[in-house]
Length: 511
Image (cartoon, rainbow, N blue to C red):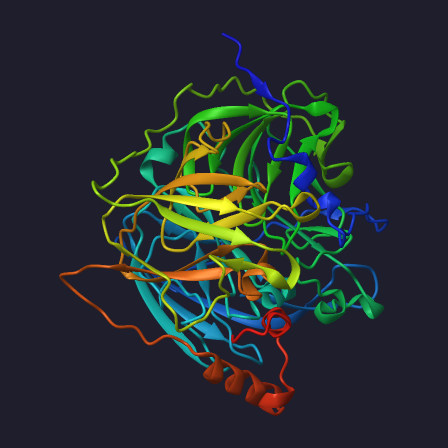
């Protein structure tokens, strides 16, 4: 039986970011093509059969992105982005989080199910310059492509923009048995999709580019590479794609509409593979796809585009014939029953620009907005009320859990939303129903992942609690943060301005 191929982007076209008043179109770089950078695998400090020890260092540096002067950038264990960290399921991780930056940061493990708020690494887990925070956790979730990024409210967006974003790969025995390419760097390739604007002397200037609806740049940057190509030496390749941009949506397709198969989403392998020619990712979403070049003549180039702008050119070389086929069913996904007598939790994302809010409020670090008992399975209805000028898609992200998408406006979710997710795009006027449960206690954030929106207050907090083991948490407060950053920058607190603050000031709200 011939499988159907999905040929559209699903999301509401009037809400695409191309219609934003501040939209910055991508432009094809005019600089020479260069090999796609593949983030190296981070080498453990020590490893045993049951435990792995890593040091993850946030550091400042310079990166050769364009001809001429190097760009000042930040990265993990390198000058830009990060080395890829591997988390085998069942092992216990011991990680030293070292801050060699000139100001405080945090290390957020996006998509990792770990206790909050300190291990999770949101704004309540600051690591000050010259200091190291140690965390330990046991990996207990399916194989997936996750990521690490800075999360110090309200300067998350600026620190990610500077380069603090890297990949973390969970591995497990079940995924290892599936017929997927997995030779990292050869046929198993990460693609971190970002965009930047280069100013004088090839430098980035976040404040000059600032937009409360999300900072964008005209130059696509893939794995920290401008105008990249990749040499294809196998018939099939697996692309682990991350929308690592602050604001931009990516509408992906290959030249000549070469079909591809999505096999995994944010939280891991999907129950069934889904065929595509066109795929849209909103901010922070991941998609693992397998591309078969079997019908491409060696010597030809296949280009990956976003809309009509080239992102990566795949130069096809001779390869051995590969007759591998994917099974119609990949994995079983748990779908637990909703806990009886639990009301449906309502979450409303509203506004654009500085007016963004969740449930009519802006984020406050000391306020707990919701509570959910660990182990309870609850339904969340997440609504995007924003319909100004056609509105915009808000990507809704939850810390500390991988949820299931139940429905969109009471109808079936998109075909590639039947696996675990931690981020889901919500169209204007739409309600997306999620099935949510927490396995660890802690305080966790949930927010829009247009990063300037979360910095601007489109964020709230939930405590996952165990009534038999009540806990208290030391939560970061704005005064402590402001005093620390002002001291680090050598200025008075009254002279400190962090980008997200303008959204609060315009609305006359306390941060």
